[in-house]
Length: 387
Image (tube, rainbow, N blue to C red; front, side):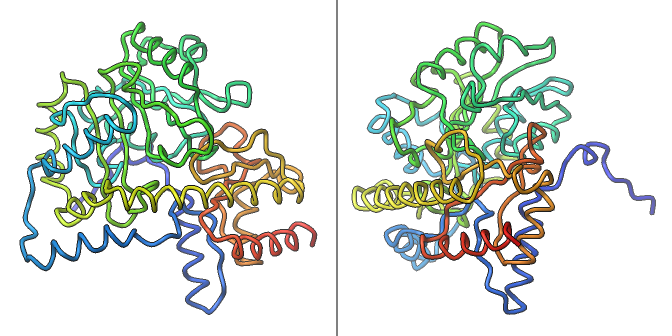
């Protein structure tokens, strides 16, 4: 047999944090104590009400396919959430339940991108988003961002960098890895600019709910006909359940449903029934309590990283990451992360996972560990940089 690797796979880059996670797990299997600050996964367990809803569903013994677009009750619950939380009316028929936000990105890009077209993204950004674009033989157009625009693409940068083959813009707010937010006014201006240029706007809102000052507006508040990607993984604390959602323009409802039918048939029915419990008043109270704890952790880690000599341009406004300049200690963030893991059992993510713009000089710290565990991590980190 003459087996070939598809040409497109040469453009799909590995996700370095998963390599580091695998090594961390190997060290743990050898008996090492590893403190995880590398992966974007809340350390809190799935909320009890959600677990109970999943258990009740399974006891009924009827875990069957749902419609490709998702459980009607869950789609309606998400629509109600947008009315209550954002004051935005969304037709439940435009909401698709997906296997995590990753499934939402596949549907969004698969239904709107042609080969050779480009999607503009900030550099640094979450790396898998760029790979999703490459999967459809389209191009990722990375635009360097810095503190001047709070590490976000704004209307000016979009207009300045628009090319003949640019077909759309993806903005994540709050952003991974920086935790930065685009103000509601700037978000509206960015959407207006993309619309004026005839492009698609993709809003990555998976860290909504994990915000520590003024709550961000959904992109739907500025323009109804945009793609919005969200997830139950982060604020809702359901990472391993692999469930997210996508809101699409009216023009794309039929084609996205057809694509969903072919790509994954339907999202896990157990996960969908579990997610229904997420919107109860009692569960939302618990989720807000957890968000308050993340804010305490952010403040603690921020102050201590500055104390150790890391440079941070601004305190993160959302998500659960700090993107810190490590150039005082190393010009090679990947080697820094590897050596820190081997020497001290502290797992962090190098900036090289998130693009090219200053990547070798930055480390992403996830404050998804408790303060006692972060205190121990900081002790080890100080020992490592002072050796």
